[in-house]
Image (cartoon, rainbow, N blue to C red; front, top):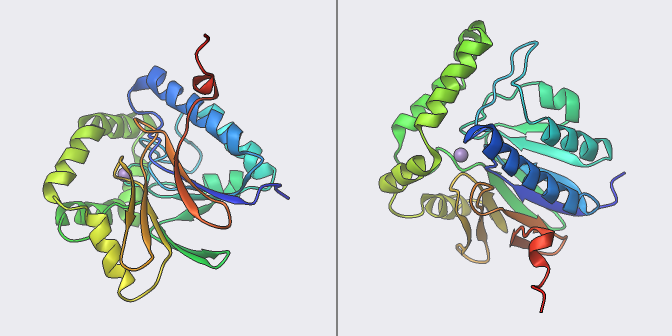
Amino acid sequence: MPTGKNLYFASDIHLGAGGHASSRQREDRFIRWLDMIKDDVAELFLMGDVFDFWFEYKTVVPKGYVRFLGKLAQLTDAGVKLYLFKGNHDMWMFEYFVTEFNATIISNELVIERNGKKFYLHHGDGLGPGDNKYKFLKKIFRSKLCQWLFARLHPNLGIGIANAWSHNSKLVNAKIGEEKLHPKEWIEIYSNEVLQTQYFDYMVYGHRHKPMDIQLTGKSRYVNLGDWVSYFTYAVFDEDALQLKYYKEPDAEVPPKQ
Ligand SMILES: [Mn+2]
């Protein structure tokens, strides 16, 4: 049994983005964070775009991320419950993480209640009004036929195309593009709409690459997890309240010598 009791949430690590060296830096930092929380965590929610691209074939998975995967194995072997959300970059996770980590894969939203608090959890893509082009693409990409066809391509070709495409839609440009489409914080608008029919204490998302803690209708809060590209942010629920935090490297906290 895990000794920890807390719930931890993080998203948008985009492992693989920016080339091997830059990705390793992000991976190492994220692992240091996992080490920091390992005695304290009961349930770990990785809320999408953990990988800049992921596709698993029946017998093949993408190269890389071995330290991260090893650390996840260590945590889940010790009894930590892992939830992996599909993001818009890694919507093609199938059985591998279930087999290896006994993870629960979440395709859309997950609703949970812990210690009397109600949570609504979603990666954050394709919500709210507009962006019909993306919503249409998401349907196609998530279709069995599309996945079957993609799996027929040789991995060198398939993952090559995916990486080229991912490099093309750079994170920052994608963010600016989305903000042009939705000048208002659309996840906030969406959340308030959901709250009209159902109460949640916390509505937690990623995807925006921007940490936010916004008061919604009534007592509800919208927490956006930010990312591990520029902010290194996460949320923790300690049986009492949800807090958005910045991960500071332990050595960065040492006060300068007099
Ligand atoms: Mn995303």
